[in-house]
Length: 149
Image 1 (spheres, rainbow, N blue to C red):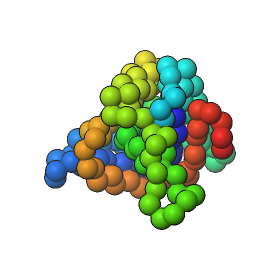
Image 2 (cartoon, rainbow, N blue to C red; image 1 turned 180 degrees about the vertical axis):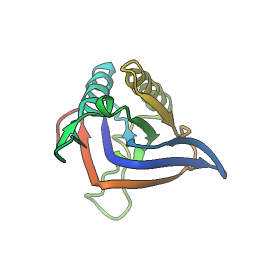
Image 3 (cartoon, rainbow, N blue to C red; image 1 turned 30 degrees about the horizontal axis):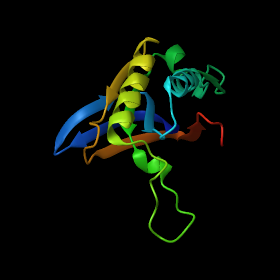
Image 4 (tube, rainbow, N blue to C red; image 1 turned 120 degrees about the vertical axis):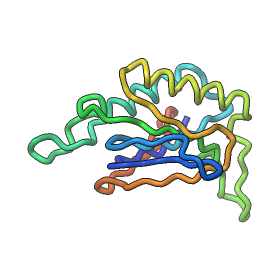
């Protein structure tokens, strides 16, 4: 499982002109699922991302987690995070999970984050989405359950 995690002051996702998810301060998470991902990857990613100490404390240091600041999370499915661009000019997506597995693990990730008391908004799986956000900092991190980076 891979994620692009952005600290935001606000973020939203729109499908066909309708806002389907919106948050204030928190994290916008673009989440990709791989063919070999399991429930262990879901648990690792949910715990890692919720626990990231990337919000400022009273001294201006990145020392507080999403839960500590009472922030929310906007989770958007993004199979293109598994696009392999090493050969040619057209990305290969063979490492990305198919729609059924991808949706199942995406929903499990959302549920695992909610179980930690975080308010979660989502995009719409397999839809063309417009994601808007104000990156706070900017702070952007890459997280991979296989710890490849």
